[in-house]
Length: 160
Image (cartoon, rainbow, N blue to C red; front, side, top):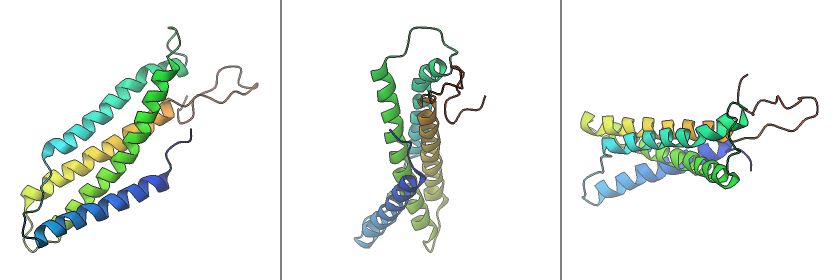
């Protein structure tokens, strides 16, 4: 499995941004109030990032050779890395939606801080999820098998 590419994250952010802004615009044009994201949206996304890191910690410890316990279940490691990949892609789309909300609220004739701050928190929470998911993807990468390394290979993305 390859790591999540920056272009996939950028495309997800752009699509989410367009959908977030267009959805708000359609609501207002049709006479409905705009959606203000709850602050818990950003907090929940940040908490998901922390959960991802906690799930991947045993895998990281085992891959780096710190943990001498029995090997990690490969199905568990696969689930964690797939959850991380899904988290990075979902986080990029939700970052875009939050940015779309921010652009929509900031472009109104009367800017309300009651709408801007929850949107900022949503963007920050989604960015935390993306960063956590990308870190977890790196943690779950096995070191390359090379005869020169003598078993002391460092996982990709880790500094020794």
